[in-house]
Image (spheres, rainbow, N blue to C red):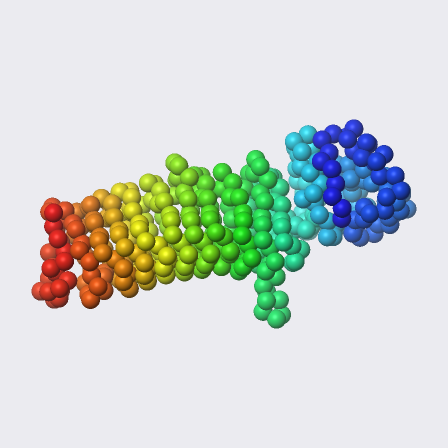
Length: 379
């Protein structure tokens, strides 16, 4: 479909219709419809394209009257006027009315444009995206949840469908609250997505093996589930916006992010899970904020370039294999009153100086090797 102008009013639609003339390039792949120049024939009724777009899509009369069963291969993202504030409230109301009719007839979902949608209470949920070879996707602001697996399916040849997807644009003013488990799993070409303020939850494996270079986490995010950004191998920078509400980085969140060089952990964070930063082999420095109380096992294991670590006042235990194979590590400063340093927290042969407060209760046991004990320094 060709580029369409941005339409701000019905008057603009009329002007657009006049400008069409005899041009034949506007073709819409909609089942049960015939096309002729700037007109569309629907079940024997001929209407102008602009009238069709307004009455049959904006007003949803094509749904309510049952004239057209579904839209196929419809590039809705370019029909900007359908999402203009002048039409949005009416459009969403019609969509809900239509869905209620579908439910009364025994259905549970609707197909509009390239989306399969469901509605639960006040939520309009993007259940599936159906255009397998899409390179760019526009998600309207009225979507409140992207369901798990919405952009992930496997073909009979075990190739992922959405391997061409490069960019996801979420409309300004989005009401999106949740991105479900596996939502963009294995979208290996996905380079860009604008996560909106208001987003609260990012599901497990949501962006597994995506191709991001940087990620900006909105302050509204409360939950990032395990493996959410695992093996995003091009990811260099993660930024948490000010006043973050995030409490926990779950297990393996950034595991295998080989290029990760910079991350600013938020002061709201209380727990960093097992293997959260394992194999982040480009990370050279990390400051763990005072708010963090718990570090998981293997949390920074195999961070080969990690040189310096500052552990905030909240941490009282350095767990098993926390810094295993951190071959470049030269200095660890723990500001809290450390009670436990696991014998296997560091590699014995490469252990750096570990500075802990004099008030810490930790004392090396007789089982700890001499070299290990000599490098735990109270100051």
